[in-house]
Length: 219
Image 1 (cartoon, rainbow, N blue to C red):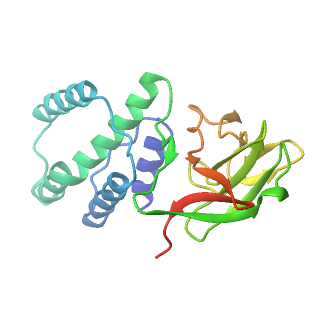
Image 2 (cartoon, one colour; image 1 turned 180 degrees about the vertical axis):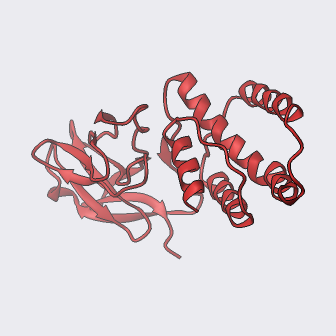
């Protein structure tokens, strides 16, 4: 699966992936990745015109390919039928992200079936500070600025590493890459190009002396 890992990583990094003929297992993995991606809330979708242009270019390129050996026909058929279509859609998202000058990402966590979950006593959160929370379903950070409470996801939008609170520098650090976010979710610095998306907003409020976040039900 090393070829598949390299292929996907290059897509995520905005680089041209190395072409390869996938095995049945690799094709299944591509299919599963796309199903998981499409099931996410508010999935990133490339512009319709970009997809149409990409489809036309792929069709023109496929028409000029030599006939593959018989032993490869079945694998290429699988890839063309589902796996490659999924990979092409992923590539389109990455390429379109680069063209429009920014990465896709969720602006806010908005569960269909959510509940207000208390995470901290209101008087325990001072002005300008942030506190980590974990509801068992969602982890994040609540902060207070200009007297108002807000919350952001605690997971890096690049490769989903759990962020660490750096209170002295008033930022959230990613332990996987040299990337840091502000308490408001904005990217302060990053070694990545393009930089990762802003951290999704989590709805937060003060009620009954508690700070609560609106998250999916645990069961």
